[in-house]
Structure formats: C-alpha cells, structure tokens
Length: 67
Image (cartoon, rainbow, N blue to C red; front, side, top):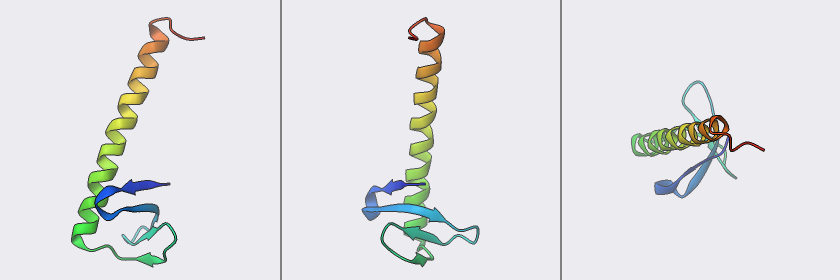
C-alpha cells in the first residue's frame, strides 16, 4: 500500500493491526491524534476517488466504449 498524506507530506506504506504505521523511509511508529486524522482523511478521499474511477470504467464498458 502507498497512501500519500498531504498534511504530513509523507507516504504511508504499511499499517499494523495495533494502529502503528510505517512511513516511507522510516521505522514503525504510533501516529499522533492529528496524524491519525490526516491518514484517515487521506484514505477516505482515496477510497472515494477509486470508487469513482471504478464506476466510470464500468459505465464506459456498458456504454460500448470498450476495445
């Protein structure tokens, strides 16, 4: 996984089940409350953008725009 978190100017590359995160080129750490909120916000936006992409591509296929 790679998730860019703009407010932190960092990329999350792994998340542990206990809530610790590993940022690109860094060791595991427990994010602060502000960092957790920034990561959740970035992840929510990424999910929405990917869902929109999937919808667009599926609708394009239905509309006959496939190769």
